[in-house]
Image (cartoon, rainbow, N blue to C red; front, side):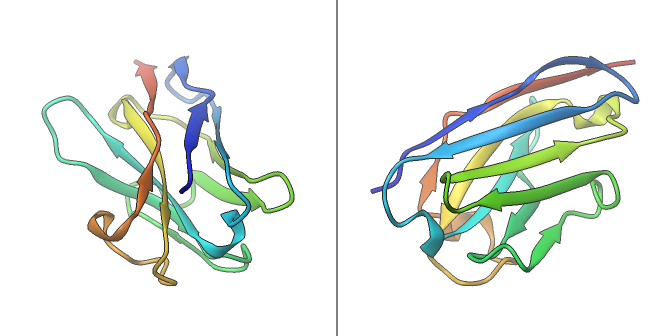
Length: 124
């Protein structure tokens, strides 16, 4: 069992930055691919980014490439999403998730554990 708790969301102006954190419980954190997803009001959940167990491989959705960076610290059971050059269309609830499949391109349906989400609002 893995419990995930996101933090770091908030309100920011367009062009600004936010840093989301996801703290995981359990001693098996390093055995999971970790991902970030988001869901805007009235829209389907969207893949944002994923990182391999060791942190040496990453994957990004097309809409965030070049602006967002994912990282993890297995010693601290933490995954970070650094979001720069934010746009109003980045407004959504952001979710951290853990996947036992060793594939950073796995769809959201394969993720085993999910956090409660943190709201990110980008004003224009």
